[in-house]
Image 1 (cartoon, one colour):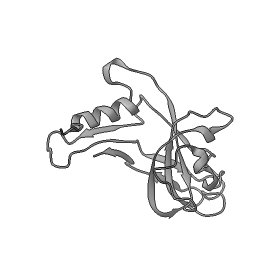
Image 2 (tube, one colour):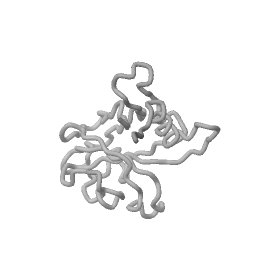
Image 3 (cartoon, rainbow, N blue to C red):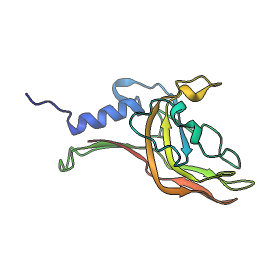
Image 4 (cartoon, one colour):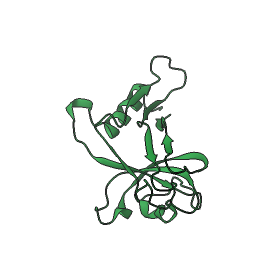
Length: 163
């Protein structure tokens, strides 16, 4: 017996998880996108920020430890698509708005190696201890990224795809 999820179902799952707008929901929750070095490559077994935070880039000059916030249930998750119309690639995906950090007073990172990965996590940890935040997804930035004073470190069209 075969089972599966339709392309519309994949988009619905993502929209429900990240926008919470399906079926009348409207709850907003803060999530975070943090930057880490390539010392500890993220993988599917990483469950909490504690698994990765030891390799976070140095804070300062426009980058705050723990990352930048994005909010579920808002336009921070700005694109939801399913392949139901073309029905050739069999996927559903959601994109996060463009994320930017502007270096001010020095470079980002403030010292050490540049960012190699972006990590999306929830806010399950307390405000005093974010190490309990659950890791949801990560993106390979294609090598170490850093910017000089006055420049922007930008992440565009990061997507979470269900296939």
